[in-house]
Structures are given as C-alpha cells and as structure tokens.
Image (cartoon, rainbow, N blue to C red; front, top):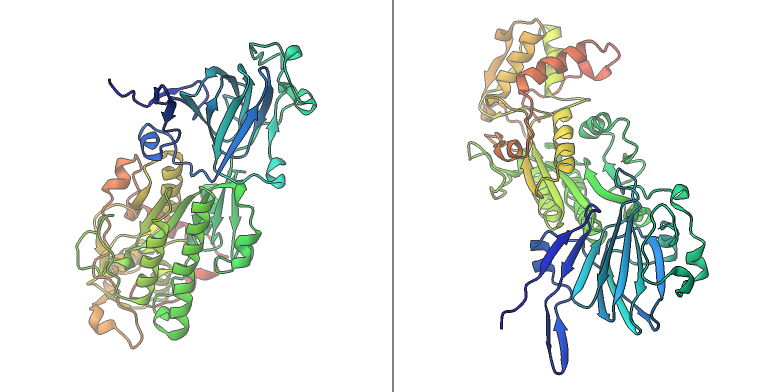
Length: 484
C-alpha cells in the first residue's frame, strides 16, 4: 500500500497555507505526523519557531469561537472531531477583510500568519482543536489582539450551524463589525546603532517609514543586559544592527580589545539569542577585516582569517549572527558616510595644499553608507534567501593612493601631490595589521536584483555634497592616510 504524502494548498489569504497530513490507520486507530519541521519547511512553511502547544477541547457540537487575530503565527490541527474553520485577514493592507473557509478533520492542518483572524465551529462532539504558536501567551500579549464579530454582515461567514443555535460566549458576541475594526499593523523594524555612519544612512533610507524605529546608544545600549530585558521584542519582526566598535588601531590596546569584543562579539551574541527566542530577522553588518587579504577577491563562503583584534571580534560576531535562522550578514569594505573618514581627510589635505603619503599596496572598493543601507533594505523587501552578502560599491578595485589621487582631482587639486608608501614603511608602533586585498565579490548581491552604484560616481557625489555643506565641521578633520 502506498504511503500518502504531505501536501500543501495555498489560500486567498497571503501566507496562509492549508496542509493535508498523511494519516496511517488500522483496527487500533490512527497515527499521523502532526508537525514535521523539515518536511513542512520544504513545502514552503515559514520556519516560524513554535514555543507553545495548546489544546482546546470542545464537548459539544456547535461550539463556536472567534474571530480572533493574534500577535503570533499559529499552526492548527485536530486530534479528534471535525470543525468548520473561518479565517479573515485583519492585517493592515490590500487583503484586509479577505475570507477563507474550510472543513477540517484529523488529516488537515493550517498555518495562520500573525494578524489573520481565526474562528471555528465544531461539527462533532468531543472535538480536540490543537495549535502551536511562536510566542508565549500572556495577559499583556492579549492586549494586542484584534477582534471581528462572528456575525459580521460584510464578511458573512457561512456558518453550518446558525449562530443563534450555536454555543457562543458572551464576549465573542460583542466584538466589533468590520467597519469598526482597527487593522493589525505589521511588526516593526528596529535599527540599533542609529547614530553612526551607517545608522545615519539608514535613517535617510527609511525616512518617512513609520514602521521603523531608530535607537542610538543613549536609547539602547547593546552591551547592557537591562536594555534587552526592558525591550518589548513582540513589536518587532526585524532588527538591523548597525552598531560596532570600529577603532581598528585602538582595538590593539588593552582597553580597546575589551571594548571591541564586548561590542562586536558579546553584544551580537545577545542579539542573536533574542532573535532566536522571538523569531526575528537579524541583519548584522560585517567587515572585510574578517579576512587576512591574501585572497585577491573575497566571496561570501570564504572562511574568516582575521589579522587583528578588530577583525577577530567581527568574525566572532558573524559566527553568532549566523546561528539565527533568519539572518542577513552584510559584509562591506572601506566604509564612507557622514562623519570622519578617509575621503574627508584627503579632501581637507587637498584644500590645505598638502602632499600626503598614502599606501599603495592595499586594494579594495569604497562602500558608501547610503548604498549599504539601500542594499539592506533591498534584501529585506525582496525576501532574498537568508545568508551572507557582500555589499560594496562597484567598479574596478583600486588602492588607497588611487582613492586619494581621485579625491584631489575632484577637489581641483593636483593628484600628483599624492605620493605613495608601502604598508610596511607606513606602519607605526601599535598599528593594527590590514588586509592586503579587501575586494569583495558582488555576484551574489547582483543575483538578487541589486546593483550597487560605481564607487567613482558615488565619490564625486559625496565630495560635491560635502563641499555644499559649509556647516559640516567634520569636513576638515585630518586623519591617518592609511585607510581605516
């Protein structure tokens, strides 16, 4: 006898899927695999991470419950009896008010996304209705429910047993009609490290998007356990971690080493734990410094080989973030954004008529913060496969000296004033080692439909914008001429 197979059938409500489960029976009764993560994920079920299993036993035919939209995902099935199920999309969006109905027995299961109103009516006595959810029930969570009246005239659920003959609680009879229902809003996005170079770019990228919250260190210290305990993580679907310790040379000191590991590794481990516990998508920003630079072009699958403390702490953070089932690790190189950076240093030197000596044996591409931010948003909105992605600007690789010459040229100074020096000759006591090559392979991000702008174009735009901002006090800050 052939073994029946698990099958899935989509519904008119986005994200909601009806499953037919193989049930194996004989004279003793029956057996089924009620929940099989591997098989169901392979059929497209989100890996939603259930944490609680509930059973609603209904003694009488005609018991009717709902319509409740809850702030978590549910996987519903039956242990005994039959139900008529009714689901109404109560999420804010174009499918608000969409109805789907189905009769279910022990061979059926359905995945109900957060915000879809759920109701059922028992068609047999002694019906056991079971469901998995991916958050723990609490009185506080119940305050986030959205309700719809079982008898709403616009939705007009075709109940097999008329509601005036059904067993319905007084509370369920008093829920609002559709016209008075406040749709359940989508869970939000939280940007941490929102005051840094990338955080500032993310603020600009998401300007006007009221579903995104921004937290700088004063609002949320990623190294403070109390901040994690105080946060209501149920509000969020995605966390973008733009916070990092980036003082590469200072990381080689005793104090800097502790700070680098506390922020780049320890805090990311805390974020990863939260993301797993609350089924969040974690976006974590990585660095070319996780490599030693002996490979000419770095792909996403290359094993880390960091040279210094900064790179080591970033590699440890990457390993923690990769544990999260829904994660994007976004690896960049030579980041340029608002605030102090190599490009602004060279622009200031060009304005002063200086002749800087700049290393010419380290190769890479600039990564403008605005393009990293756009790449992050693209990965999230396009539902790209989870994993690691290189995101820098495009174009031919160049050395730091090449960048300096181009900055001088764009600033109207003589590029010939930029002289070259080797990394070995430039090195000073306490300076962190740098990768020889920071060139990142961009094939994978291109294959998702995102094409980073050429670095040369972004550099010209950046310098033009800096020159147009006379109040920018960072514009004349002079730093080392050896890159990050």
